[in-house]
Image (cartoon, rainbow, N blue to C red; front, side):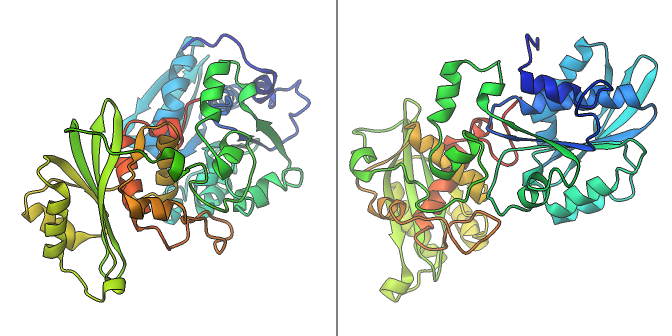
Length: 419
């Protein structure tokens, strides 16, 4: 990768620690803001240059939501740039370790994932001279604080970058609002701070979001998610008749319920677009009759009709029903159940017309008009646990089938956009 130029804000990130910088007295740097705003690469490059200029024989850490996403989102672009600048980089993948040499100096950079509360245990005991936390707002507080506590070497500094979440998020409350108190340099990025983006690309990203996601990912605001989740969707305008004739392939998505409603969606593809052409929705509390797994398998077979079903994307918690489907000869894929990631992917695919809800899918259209953000979950985003069964099966389908391979473009927690 050839870097042609940095924006003024990127150059400030690159140089903030230098002996002539007006920002050199800070102990930490925090960069937040819009997606594709150029935070990641300049922070990673600056972090390594600082470490290699100021230390010899020390240990550092790159931290991400997972080691896999860290390699993809940061190291995949950073490593070639470092080599072009004369750094020697040798990765020991089995140890999650990157050894960097230049000018007679060598330092060790550990790769660490902070996916859940238990991840803090993996960083205990190590002594660090600095840490870069990529997407700090997506990591558990316990992991971030443990990483900070390990930086006990004299002259150590902290590096954070993230996209915004809700205004009650602990990182916003404890670090961004208190950046002066914590002696941290705070820089807010927009897409205009990334000179590598054309106006066409910027507009494409702007058109991919609405509501809270637009304010967070495009405007870079720490804003609450409230109101309708798919607020941009108008059934009168966006629902379409089912395509005529046989489609190219078919998949069924399943949100399984016994006491709660059970929802299946039949999806067919044509020329890169997936249509929800039919559905099955059963609410036992309404009918007063609870169905068995075998009865639901029969219902799924009737929904499939005479179509060849590529596979069934199922609620991962529906163990007994998955077994019954496999015994009936269906290939079953357990769905990714990351709710927020799935909502973002589904919204993006709906807005771009990559998935289409057909007019006959009344329960899906009904739930879309009612599916709302919860106001009872301060500090985290969550949909209300009502009118969400067809929404769940649609989300499973979007992530596992229609959105597979596109997560980077819609900014999941585990697969984030590049530099």
